[in-house]
Length: 348
Image (cartoon, rainbow, N blue to C red):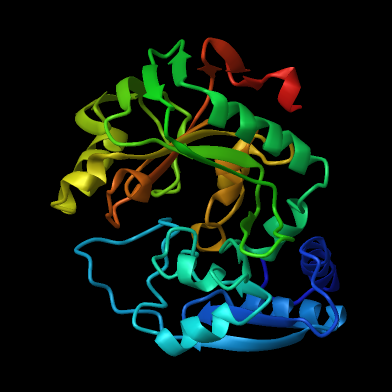
């Protein structure tokens, strides 16, 4: 277990990312946290912002009561700002919001209001700073990710196949595609660290076929490498059947059913990892409380499949799975962007 002790090298890492975000002397910056945030990262953010000369302040809100029948994990939709109108108003007036909430603001309903005034948001994932230090954003990633985003936005059809049996089709027309390279330097933009991936949120009734999760693939909601294959049948976005024997299939069946919500079975987003520094095996190296698994979402060449909320398809739910799948071939309009888990040269 890593020690929760402030290290100078971690302050350096946070400062480097704030500089990529173009934090200026005298700029107003808010550190947003909740009572269950990782205190170590909050303190490191304070010290790093001191070095930039920014005028920073805290917005700390209570972690909300649990209102779900089962544990909520890895949603990217923090509920910490629910009903906190004064806090949202303060964040909206900032140049930069350093988001250190447990789940992050990526899909939070308050995010559009915060950035509407030009504030930019840097989500620092709930990771131990040892991982953040190792996964500093690289300037070379910005053009690579932007190229992938353009390619996805221009595509009409994505297909995903694998030797394990995956045969999935995604209608990309009208999908909303975003890419993240680790920093936000323009008004009204959002980024997260660690980064290095591109994801698309398809419109309703766009995803059909079979997705086979093989042994060794990762269910990041459970922070678990699969031990046995699980086969998902998907019809017009919804998982209609979960086949498989053993713990992994049973966990997925029980967790999805526990929500009592059809939308928990729907596709949230699809995409692929592009971070050459991110490690597939990283989840095995940390105690569960030390990691949020963001690194594994981004390792290069994985097909990132997610169930749960998709606001672009009019679906909202707290049930959420992020599942990086290895060894897939991902094609856009017939052209492979990932072949058997290897990124195409255009994106390296």
